[in-house]
Amino acid sequence: MFLVIGERINTSRKPVREAVEKRDADYIQQDVQKQQEAGADFIDVNAGARVGHETEDMKWLLEVIQKVVTVPLCLDSPDPMVLEMAYERVEQPPMVNSISLEKERFDAMAPFLRGKDCKVVALCMDDAGMPKSAGEIIERAGELIKQLGGLGISPNNVYVDPLVQPVGTDTQNGIMVMEAVKGIMTQHEGVHTTCGLSNVSFGMPKRKVINRIFLCLMMSYGLDSAILDPLDRQLMSVVKTTEMLMGKDDFCMQYLKATRAGIIGD
Amino acid sequence: MFLVIGERINTSRKPVREAVEKRDADYIQQDVQKQQEAGADFIDVNAGARVGHETEDMKWLLEVIQKVVTVPLCLDSPDPMVLEMAYERVEQPPMVNSISLEKERFDAMAPFLRGKDCKVVALCMDDAGMPKSAGEIIERAGELIKQLGGLGISPNNVYVDPLVQPVGTDTQNGIMVMEAVKGIMTQHEGVHTTCGLSNVSFGMPKRKVINRIFLCLMMSYGLDSAILDPLDRQLMSVVKTTEMLMGKDDFCMQYLKATRAGIIGD
Image (cartoon, rainbow over all chains, first blue to last red):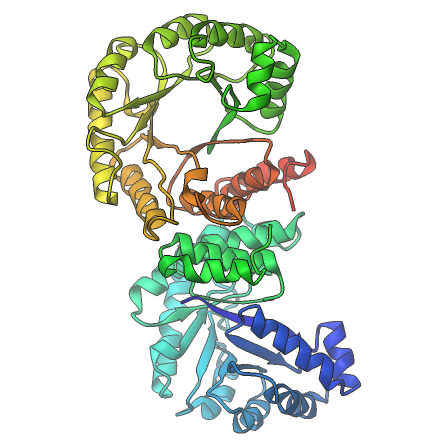
């Protein structure tokens, strides 16, 4: 089943930042509930935007969110201290967003991740920068899976993010990342792939159209998770409809349920 | 490049039937011009709905259409006599829609097709009925390519239609036909695939959403042509955006051109 990671609780989004500043629990709780109703399987929580306040903001957000949430959380921070604090407070095994092959980042995160019961978003980034070919992405994915294995994180808890790059910069950037997803999913039994979508359309007109078609294509190449806004009905339509057409929705039950719930946009 | 066969000039559509009855050349010519502007590569012409009038209606339509058309036509009739008449009247080598493996139909069409300079839509239908697996579709495609080859039609002039069946009847019908397209395109160098889309969503709610996602998925499995309404902006958005994301649109030129022409819907 395709996993939707709801991206809305992020202090880089203005209304969330304001709600966090005002300690407006209602706003946050309603947003989380709407994401859940729309089909989010994880709720991403990112408190990084108010510099110097991440720990206290994350702590408050977790307290507030856990009163209403039924799905697990995705703890989104580059700071292992924040993650350690957050990990102690969550009620279900979380997803951790994220680690990469950049040496400094990996070494900082390793002690926190070692032996933890969690899923991990693993970015195909290393000290040489963004990957330049599908082969390079697949190679980095293999290295991430291996190194995370060394910390006791099994492949079925790894969500490889191949890093989406703009087609406006290079027309091959779309197909490159699709081929990479296919390679990762074929070569590594049990591992998952995830990504954000919007980078693909950077600098182009009609970005939402591009993001939707890109999601559908990525799913057809094997992507089994994405970080997105579950309140975007047209994006959720793509998820439900693609699952059904790919033969992964018995008796079209999930699609029909989503239609009745008003989740399928026009 | 993906080929769009514009489906609108069909007397089973009420406004077209009325225009044909009234010999309203303006209506027909405007519709054809709109299809061309929206990106149709072929204009399908079907005069079959007024029983007993097909020959005269087709003749009139061709006269009227050829005054404005710049792209080739797709002659859509099961009657070889009508096709023979039409073939004599077209100014560019046409596409013929269609032949199948049903013995009676094939034998009737063979004398007309032999040695003709045309493209042919070849339906994966035989006397046993609709195909029941991807393997069966691929097998029938091979047989069609072979038999058409015997009539002097080369594989690069064959547009295999794998026959789209409703997912509402069997959830595997979508993925079955996608796998079939992949198999046909992989196993037969130079051959093309085409299809109508709307059968896939028969009996389901929000059919247009399903048809659009299905088109995107079919293209990702190798489909390189479809019979559709080019004036449906959301469907044409799928064509242009998918081509771009699959790396088939150098410098995103076609996508950007379509955006400027207002063809990319929201």
